[in-house]
Length: 407
View 1: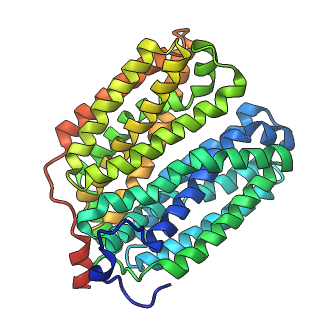
View 2 (view 1 turned 135 degrees about the vertical axis):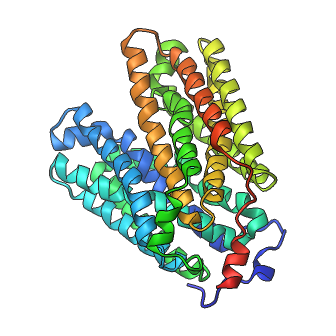
């Protein structure tokens, strides 16, 4: 870990090189993204190994999401006075241990416990990482810094998840969790070596964090995110059967579809980072309108296999403007507790994941067909946009630089 606090004049160069400290945060995003999504790819292996049904094994995914939703606000509040750098290192250590615990689970209940524990640090890692990244890049490049970190998560969809799925298929599902656990410890070392010292927010206490939770607008945007981002998850949750049933794409090409989705997300997160540095609110509304457009496009032309692939790319791309913009908005709505605001975004995103999958399942059960999920996604995204319009005020971005200098 670097011995001194971040030096703004030295770390805010406009040059093309990405600081190693931001790359370390991106590696953390890659590690967490690989673990989060890899479970879906090795679900059948888990079910076979533990002697349970596939739906029962799916409870491991639910347990992880529940850990994210619960862990983000609780850990953020209780760790208010801890150095941001120290906290993020401990979070990655806990994440690695939880993955190793998952690897050695002998029953489904033990696996669910391991996945729940792994989910607890997820949201706080990205919340604290957003604050550290902003301290490194500068308040006027907050979106850039956050896009680098979250870019690691989106790249995991393209690279990490297929690799872990291959490991699970050929070496066993336990080996996949062990591999991610080891990757977590490698990430921990990178964080220790690369990150500058970033203290807790000045005057931060459990009380100030709890006070931030009293902001009704904060919860309004949280609800908007939990509903509105569900539009993307109606597609992501059922992209495999949608591709096969509606676009007549063979099962062999489904991994390509998932990779295209991930590539779209990766492109979107980097472009949205640049836009967020211009205007958080503009990024949010661009995200809403373009995601709605992408979902409508998919709903109209999804029977054509080529246009379906392009539509999936568009949904992945546009959704990242929404994800990054909403995280920035939640940080602005909690200026005395930015780590909490950013962490809450990831709780909301996992809520959106559950909402999208659940409501999508109802639509499918009622026999409307898989392309109807795109229209359900439009409805959810529009509701989210209306809620944001009603509750989100105009706010100046948080000046992390000033917070650090004042400390």
